Amino acid sequence: MHWVRILSKHESEESGDFVRMVKIDGQKICLVRNDGRFYALQNTCPHAGGILSGGWCKNGHIVCPIHRYEYDLETGKGAPGQYDYADVYPLELRDDGLYIGMKESWWKKVWGG
Image (cartoon, rainbow, N blue to C red; front, side, top):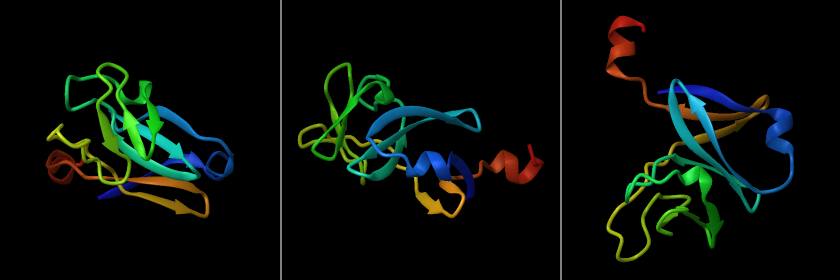
């Protein structure tokens, strides 16, 4: 796993909640600050491909703007009856900002690309 800084220290200390898309190594991630805590999930809704970063938070869940499917911010688990989940990514708040843990692809390990 490699760690990538996604917010500077200043950005990570700003107040207010948000839902936004960040791009890391060509991959789009849904970054959320809700009630002062950060979360990172896949940006594409597993139900029908909606863009989760275009959604909003409700009761600890991200809500997809297309069909209103909900995913737990901490676990990625879909609401009861959905039988699906969104991938979640580990985050670390460090002295110089917020970092996300990304799995290294086998391609990068073998070829260094």
